[in-house]
Image (cartoon, rainbow, N blue to C red; front, side, top):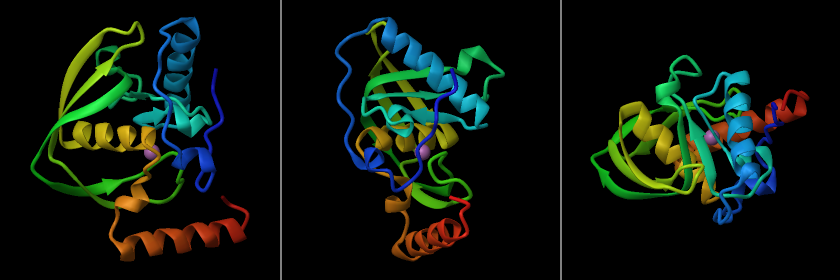
Length: 169
Ligand code: NI
């Protein structure tokens, strides 16, 4: 089922998500819905708070549905290693039309559970590293505009206010 993506400044986006404790059919349905919603929006990742569910689960698929091997389900994820720096453009499905550069670690290692509760680790570089950091930030209530420079953040916030006034947000 395609879920409704909430946009900034919906409060749920800035609340830390609750840890997942039950690995049941509800969780598996939520994961399937998150993938379906990501693909319908032509995104590469989506976190549960973005569909109004304040829980620590997110999905990433850099292939946008083309390669099942790239589907990544991250439940209760933690970044356990960060290395280097990168500074590239990001967007977010909760911020349509907003894209700008965000400082991130070049490489990360993430420890997470899958939809059955099994722990695993995943390493990411470049785009995957950015996606992992961006989505895990969502689970902490942290949004990418608050990682931007003050100048870029102010530009983004002004743009959002303009879109709101025009009824396009
Ligand atoms: Ni996002």
